Length: 325
Image (tube, rainbow, N blue to C red; front, top):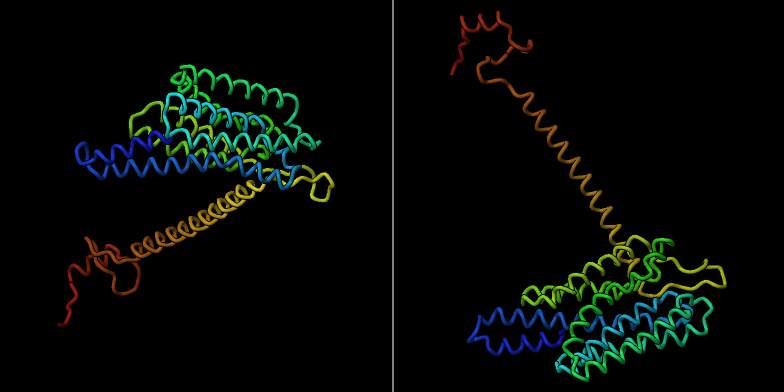
């Protein structure tokens, strides 16, 4: 549906003079284009982990295989839907996603077989990989023999599963107080991507578009909250021989965390300064009015002997002072 909405916006833009104002059509076209760009960025996210693993194979221990498998299955499902319904604009974007998913998964398996610390890439992960491949083949065959519409509905559910896949390691994150297995780039770009498509869906009134994406927004936001709360901790100490550096993408999370901390401290400092200023200003105003002379129903004391007494008031009333012009 990603590229299909872009195609729809282009068609509406050509009909703009007859159907609706040109400005609204241009806004829809721009929104759809931005959403497609975010979708491409999101589908590129797993490559950051795969490339990092190719540079430092031991880092494969930080990659969650369930996340990559669900990502690949989602793209394959959408590709089958686009090929056999057919919806041609859907094909290129998801074909690219299939390539990214297969390459990333294959690269991680290639290095995980040689790494003793790749605890997530065990027999369970191997079974899950084989099952995902078999399921993808069945989905493709079903779509090819007339079930493409049903595959499109299935694609919405698989998309939701894909957004929630990184949370399969949430138990470990809470236990270790470390977000080392959560994909930073995929969570961040997933939030932006689902937010854009949620906006597109609301604007066009398409429930199949905004429905899954609002769930994707919440799941991605939960992942970002866990990443922010629990900084990633590398395996082993820096001096140990078994020390394994974190994935490079976690440095972005550290920068964001430090920046937000600095902003928080600056806000607290400025708030304290403003509070002191307001307090001093209010005290000055109270002091100014409390020492001002009374000019309502009282006489002003001019002799410097303190407030007027009843006797002084009586004398002044009987003998009012005379002022020379």
